Length: 441
Image 1 (cartoon, rainbow, N blue to C red):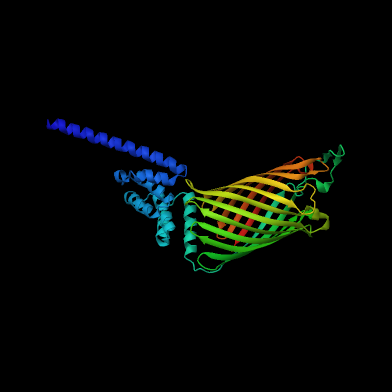
Image 2 (cartoon, helix red, strand yellow):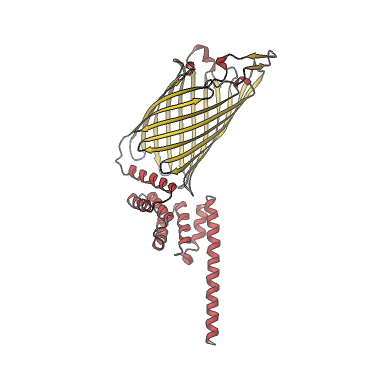
């Protein structure tokens, strides 16, 4: 009889353990899916209900800690990650996220200790990049609230496949005359090699804990080997006010830019703008921006192209946690150009989308890429082509940032622009490859 009772008790225990493991597997699978969808709060509440039954299980605790961290429950996250590290002291994920939780709480000494402990474990390159970013931020937070000055210089060698942004065809058809017209050399696509030098700097001065002002400038000179009429000297200066409070950062700014082309004044641009950045959680951020600009051509023969531009848009950014070191960004924008002096094609409406990716391949090596699609429609009929001009432009970019020494970066980059227009004179393709050596101070 006693043997029979022991058998029933053993069977009941095994059955209970089996059901418990099945339940935790279902909960963790559902929570993992919610986290992947960005629903951290839902994942946290789901796992929190199971905590009493499964606390001490490293797999369950780590997932619960991640959900708590992403849901903004940083204090709770530190307690959960402590449970994981008691059982598995070398759990790299828990150690990294523990550091992130302390960083969010403003406990920078503990955050630094966790990140340095993880560094000693020689984690993968992507994790090392993330650790380096946090340690740099901690170092910056620990500095006195004083004026910060940064500067850079750079040298670029490159090849421009279409300096003039002109059509590749030797002739174009003009409907108003019903004839093909031969284009002169200056109006057609021309390729050339170039070298470019640049320098710039920025000063940020804090007014108090939440407010600061800034001023920055950039200067660049590009010299083409043979197409001298397109040598460029450009400079701009900008400044404004920044207010940071909690998850929000607001910025107001103004800028002025001057472009010389072929040793002669070409165009001047003045702008006013504002943007607002809001941190949704540890990985996601939204930004909204608006800007108005005046573009004025210096030469009297070009002033018919003067216009005022108005643009606004929104950007979403995500710093993914798996794998760490991946930054994604997507932007939607729209705008309007208002002619000033009877521009040939009149006013213009435009809209577009932009995407970007940055991937940490190693602690000192980042890959970046970008794509922009823009559609523009003009409001006045072009007399020569007897139609309202429409443009569809595609921009692609791919490059690497290699930080081979402190303050030094080597950046190879290739870009491609394709503009398709229903007015043949404005259809062109442009490919540019460059290698830039940059020094940051």
